[in-house]
Image 1 (cartoon, one colour):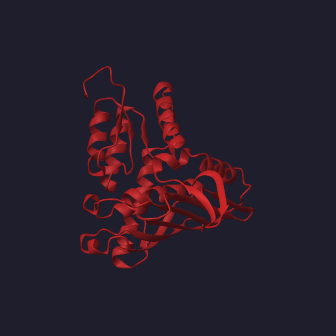
Image 2 (cartoon, one colour):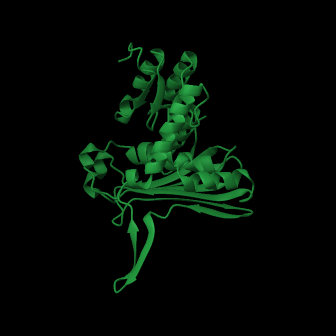
Image 3 (tube, rainbow, N blue to C red):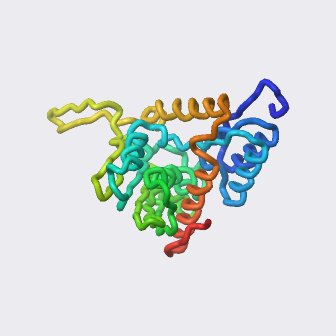
Length: 274
């Protein structure tokens, strides 16, 4: 595949442990790269991908799809326009609908492959400032028998930003009611919220109470965002413009994820590596 002159770009969606090597190989072959998150599992590998892509002059975009979801795009505009004021408290959460095979989940997944979305979202909603310290709590509440294998299925992370804002990111591998992704920014000028887990705006007040139709998967809730991020990538490839979600963005979220995993292991506040 790499020498094929008919191939201009690749999408890397293999298991996370292969992402960095595949991205480096693609860049060296002169192929533009769309890489699913996480781009790498170590900061050294993240730097290797970024440096190789830059030297090759190829587009490198990472799959943080919430940046392309309408609610999140609109919230970012409100923050950038100053209508929310100075961000003070931020929140991002991911709750999966469950039904997974724990034997197929690698240790650290909740930080490196789930919460990494939320870490990127917090950065996206507080532009111009980076997370400096984190404090995380996590446990195997979804699959207690897998605790010894490192399968932590429930986590909450508190993140301190350089500008003083405080963010919380939370995740759980099982929500009986469906797939739930939300966000919030409280600023000096107001509050903006994103997402409510509903498939549609329909509600049904009936004998059993007020019922809503909730989404059961990410491809259902974020279908438009998945299309939009790939459209942005192909647009960057065709025009030669920079990616809208860069390798540096992926590295910054990874640094937070690695610090959160260390905090969960040690119980300490951990400084995020530069």
